[in-house]
Length: 109
Length: 113
Image (cartoon, rainbow over all chains, first blue to last red; front, top):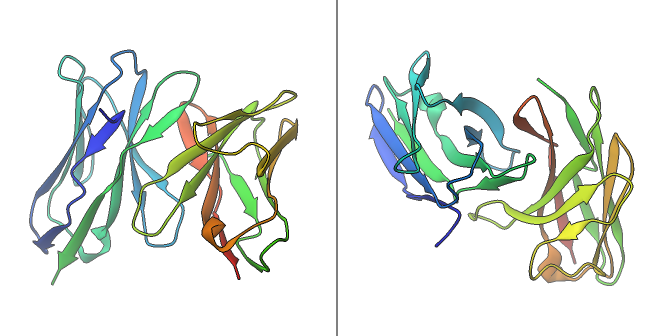
């Protein structure tokens, strides 16, 4: 089993749609969790951290379920500029980050 | 957020030559840096963990004699691809952690011809 698993997509949605990405991780001792965004031919950039209580940043909502070892990202009112690959990232320990394969999102007019 | 600078951003080299990539943490000290490789349409794959003042830890399947890592200071780690071949052409990215998050260099696109 992979350390971090994501549905690779692609997800093709119209502008204004709501889309959700899921991610599971195998190491129950993982310490912290993040969603990163990667645009084509660019480095990944931190989108948001994921907390057990759930957290929201504008149109983005992240959830963590430690019991199920599951992380989610919800994007509401999708914009064309949201088109990118979204990476689920798990900090195993000592800042050893492991990445999911990424979920590709394309938002269409 | 913390800044990690990677240089060069792209390089084209002849087969058999060596290429050095630098990764610098500009506004923080990084005892540990990570080197990743990403092939087209694939995810980031960890190659090695670079530890300041000691030997790097390589992931399974990554040749330590081919990918030389030096982390001589708290702000600089280098990756040298020795005797590069076309199959080494890829996007190489470094990262360092600060404040609980990972920050990435801009990446180096290596093309070996």
